[in-house]
Amino acid sequence: MRDYWLSKLFFDLQSSPPLGDEYRASRKKILDRYPLKPEVRTAVERDDVAFLASRVNPYLLRFYFVVAGMSEADFLKKVKTAGADAAARSSHG
Amino acid sequence: MARLAGVFASSHAPLIIRGWKDVKPANQQELTGSLTELGRRIKAAKPDVLVEIAPDHWVNFFINNLPSICVGIGEEHEGPAEPWMKDCPYKKIAGHPKLANHILQTAFERDFEPSVSHHLTLDHGFCIPLWRGGLDPLPPIVPIIINDLEPPYPSVRRCLQWGTMLAEAIRTYPEDIRVAILATGGLSHSIGEATMGEIDEPFDRECIRHFEKGDERPLIDFLNERLPTIGNGAAEIRNWVAAHGAADRRGFELIGYCNCPEVYVGCGFASWNLGARA
View 1 (tube, rainbow over the protein chains, first blue to last red):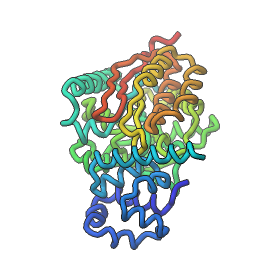
View 2 (view 1 turned 90 degrees about the vertical axis):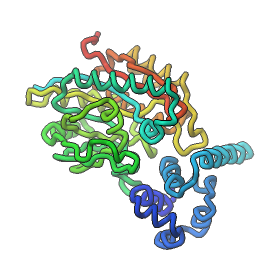
View 3 (view 1 turned 90 degrees about the horizontal axis):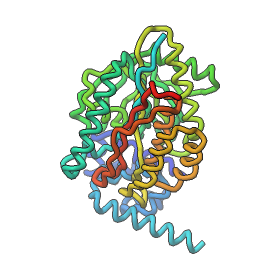
View 4 (view 1 turned 60 degrees about the vertical axis):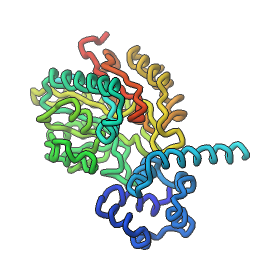
């Protein structure tokens, strides 16, 4: 299931380079404009790739972390860990 | 009547532009060779109009309204909006409203109900193969977006039928013009998933073999079975399937294949020899 406002945040950030600049300068200012659920906002603030990956389209997830300034190597590591964790949870029912 | 002058397919990996300096020289040579040959074949077809089938990468559509298929009928479209495509020479891209509307009308007559846009932004999926294939100036383009990005996707069977309809629409268009089709996307890749960066070359090779054999049912069965098991980017092979349908399922010729980890994509380039129909 997609989280609409999380998806909208990521979509807006990848659609507008000036908004991306603002976001890198002050995440709080931009996040305050979106009615994110508290746990979703916390995950965004913590760069919690595993939590966010199950709630947004993978392309938007990737675009977002490019805009947010995460290195490609770091993103790859986190997204692979997120997948491994999800597989482990799944195998434990 | 219009004539189908050529059918082509190409990958469109963003890192061909965004990360080109990090691509190994041998792969640079292979990709450049394939894209140059693709461009040469498109130019040799002398298209008066190019119908281009590509996905949208969250540029035109969002999850508040996500069409399965959209036909661009405008007089003009925007060039790519991605900041890293800033050197792309296509800033405004001419459309061809008359052919686009004929395709649209034919689609509705054949029980398709595509979405319609009077003004699209043609992102890297449309522009990288044209740019790197050396097509400048461009012929007018009729853009067709197939949703390969966010499930639910149109079925493989439906994409094949869409291609058949597209060829009929071109054949019945009442002006004496040459029309080519270029489908972009694929082959195997994974973006933003746990498998990101993984290329499934055996899948890609088998996929190519199915296109070469041309038989409809085995191709559909193969893709229905395998697409859900590999990276999300392979969903774009639906566009190749539409091109295959337009070429009447015959004459597939591989221009080149490059398993290129530096761009995360099993890159394929192809054309259909329309004179090779059985």
